[in-house]
Each structure stands twice: as structure tokens, then as C-alpha cells.
Length: 292
Ligand code: ADP
Ligand code: ZN
Image 1 (tube, rainbow, N blue to C red):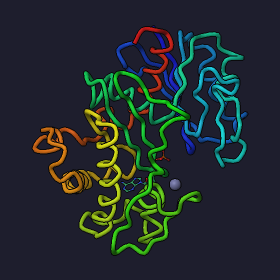
Image 2: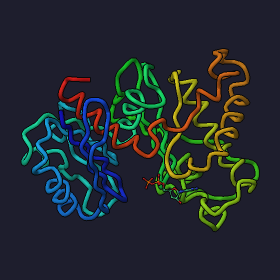
Image 3: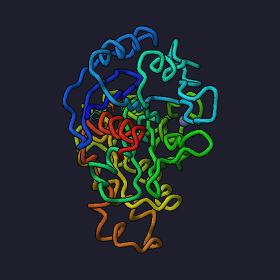
């Protein structure tokens, strides 16, 4: 069984073919350009591939309300050309197969819950800390959509006492994304995050912000695992710092073993590595087909 998968990112698109075991058999990647050009690349890739379903995990915000006439649209993104763009309807014009459609981070959460770091669990959170911050929510065996979809990258955070950086989020300034995404590291320290030494004070501050958001999410949603991915989390030394912040914030109030001595196995990197997004899109395709 061949399933198409699209990881639609704001910077690049990855398209692939996978099977019901979660194996990725082929992939291509190209930059995100104007939507017509980008979709033409997607369509050209899948045209002769004979896929039985297609799953798309997309950057957003997007419409995932299946009862809405705008289902499958990218909605209010400031990304030039992509605002109010009928992404899924354009694909449907060409491919007559079941299609799964969700946010990139919900897709990644589903991929991790199916084949990755949360396999066998009925809930997890997936954070990406990269160009922006996004959170996918998988709860009681379902991806959470709610009113629109979770936007946990924009929760407000308490400011670090030694931090004078104003934050870069155009909507909120110093929300989590504004203070902790890759561009915030660069804005605050004037060098790229990848060039900051592991013992630089930047990382304690970074963990301070991420730790706040994660502890609030644990209190609110009670996930059985928290997965932290994205470019910034390639800095593996952040994990122990974030776990310590979470323990400090929860302060013993949540008494589950997972957030006490078991925290090293609770706040973890993606089990699927940088494949989380594409594998998640594959899982969305399988769900659309009814086989997952
Ligand atoms: P995107 O969010 O665009 O899908 P990434 O998850 O790769 O892509 O995130 C890119 C961001 O992460 C950039 O701001 C980049 O500076 C930052 N980044 C990438 N690699 C590292 C690293 N090793 N350490 C710190 N920051 C990094
Ligand atoms: Zn914001």
C-alpha cells in the first residue's frame, strides 16, 4: 500500500511516499515559493506514484473544520501569496483519493504517537522550536482541533529577570515564540543559536522559557509524554535544563513518577528525528484511508 505524505513548511516542502508500516520509501524536497508554483511541484511529484491516499501536515494557520466551506485552506498567514489559499481543494482537483489534512505539528504528534517516542500512548504533546514555535496536541487517541487548532507557541510567558530582549512576535512581542524560537536567540544574542557555546547563558534563559510553557501544558492537558523537536532542540544539552525547569515549576504538586524520577523518559526528543513531520503526514494519510 502506497501513501503520499506532504510536510508543508513555511520554508520548504517535503513530499514522500510511505507504507502502512511507517516506512518512507522515497522523498523529495523543494523550497516554499508562491502557492501555485509550489502546488505544481507537489502535483508533479505524486502524478505517477499511484498513491491510495495523501496526508498533508501544513504550516498555518489553516482551516481544519471539515464542516466549513473553507476546509483545507491556509488562512491568515502573512506569508506572501498564501493567505486564504485553497491548498487541499487544489490537490483534490487532481487526485481522487482520501486526503488527511492537519497542522504540521499535529501531524508530527500523530507520527510520534504511531511510530515514535509516544508509540503505544494515547496522548502526547509535540513542540517544534524552530523558526517559530508550534504545538501539536494528541489526546485520548485523537488530534485536538477545538475552535481552530491549538496555537501553543503563542502562550504568554513570565519574563526572565535578566532578559531585556523585547521579543519578535509581530502579534504579541514576548510570547513563547517571540522569546524562544530560533530568531529570538539570534535577536537577543546577535549570533545564530547554532553558534552559541553549550555553556553560554543563552541556554539557561532558553530553558527558562520553554520550561514554563511545558509545565503549563502539563498542568492543562496532562499529556503522557512531551516531545521537543525543531532546529533549536538539536542542542541536546537543553533537555536536562528544561527538565529541571519543569520540575522546579511543578514543585512536586504533580506527583506522577513521569515528572519526578522518570522525567528523562518523559520530556524527550522526537523518536522519528527529523522525519517526525513527514511520517506524521503519512499517518494522516493512513487515517484518511481508515487503516490507522
Ligand atoms: P523550520 O522551523 O523553519 O521548519 P527548523 O526547525 O530547522 O526549521 O528551525 C530553524 C531555526 O532553528 C532557525 O532559526 C535556526 O537558527 C535554528 N536552529 C537550527 N539549528 C540549530 C541549532 N543546531 N542550534 C540552535 N538553533 C538552531
Ligand atoms: Zn506570539
